[in-house]
Amino acid sequence: MSSSTVAAEAVGKEPARAVRMSGDERREQILAAARRVFAEGGFAATTDEVARAAAISQPYVVRLFGSKRDLFVETYRQAADEVVAVLSAAAQEDDPAEAMGRAYLELIEDRDLLRLLMHGFIASADDEVGRVARHCLGEAYRLFVAGTGAGPDEARQFVAFGMLLNVLVAVDAEAHRGEDGGMDALVECVFLATRRAQA
Amino acid sequence: MSSSTVAAEAVGKEPARAVRMSGDERREQILAAARRVFAEGGFAATTDEVARAAAISQPYVVRLFGSKRDLFVETYRQAADEVVAVLSAAAQEDDPAEAMGRAYLELIEDRDLLRLLMHGFIASADDEVGRVARHCLGEAYRLFVAGTGAGPDEARQFVAFGMLLNVLVAVDAEAHRGEDGGMDALVECVFLATRRAQA
DNA sequence: GTTGGCATTGAGTGATTACTAACAAGAGCG
DNA sequence: CGCTCTTGTTAGTAATCACTCAATGCCAAC
Image 1 (cartoon, rainbow over the protein chains, first blue to last red):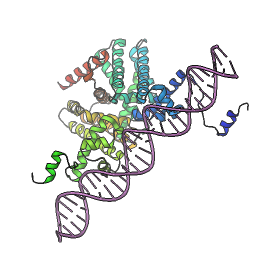
Image 2: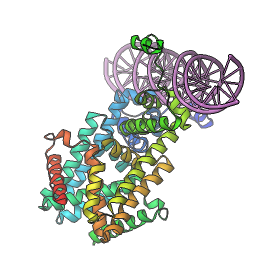
Image 3: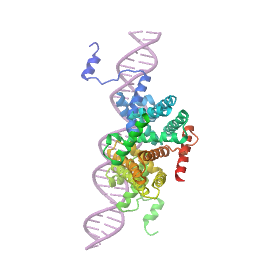
Image 4: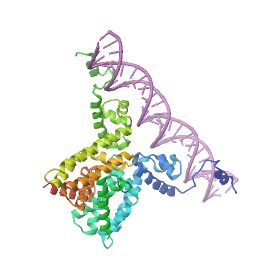
């Protein structure tokens, strides 16, 4: 009970002040929060939501990144880079085709990452985001060709299957089983295909 | 020069009043405008933009549809229904597989339609939109199986290729040729594949 | 221990937004 | 003409948003 601050905070009398952190640490933390928030609401999500997710004040979010748009672009770029890096690493394993497929499945298990990516696919409103999105897609194709030595058609099918997985995760198909016959059949078929690929 | 209204409007003295229209006609017109506007900005687009696109006042847009959300849902449902109807018709032609492929290509030539659909894939925020989106996807799969008698894998590849086309159109890949090597190769490969399918 | 810099906040500000309320204008009809 | 229903508007309102400003507390170096 040395200082009064601790006791007072425990009782809730003083306004909660965030624990002090280095600027870089805080930026990383905000980026992580922004990924979650932007994944949910896209660019329409507010800086206030990001701030609450990071447990700091809203003006500080804006200050550290300059503007909401800058924060979005940086968040998006980080996510896209992550995808490319993971695919790139998988492309150099023993069985690149299998490794890349598995790597992508693991990536999109992070629903936030995937939905954020999808938002970028449509957010062609912003030039920079569109560029990053196109690059990410192009790299997926290029890395598959380069890694596996597969022909264009096989690589195209790899990417296409990835886009199908994206959409199924985005619409939360698994959580809505039994609501639509066609969708159920599609999910089942995709599920079997992924299991087969992993065998 | 019969009435003063016409002359005055030409000179711009009287406030522009929209030509009178039946409620149903107006609703259709607003839905068409909303499709364009929501395609661009998703649910974040404003009712004011829709109103301007339809050349009427913003409150009237809200009044005719109850709320922005209701307008969005109805716009989305109409678009999804259109897709299902077109695919359904194609599934009953002589060569269903070829017809459905061609039909889908023609559908997504309407970039507004496609981008609106994509927005719904992510807008799982709204339950109803999510349901419609899942149904539309499920029907594409189901209709292909039913129409062509194809196996699950072939049908899955049909839908997957469709999703790839969606994304390529959404990120405006064609308009950005030459900016990214991987993307260029992917677009070229997809282009060849569609030409092959149409032969 | 004082000073200077960094992290962080509260309190605005002006712009925008969905939505409401009230009213205007014309068409059809007796 | 008068009455009513529908179409459409203008003028709000309360809420929300990104962003700004001035201040405050804290740490470290002198």
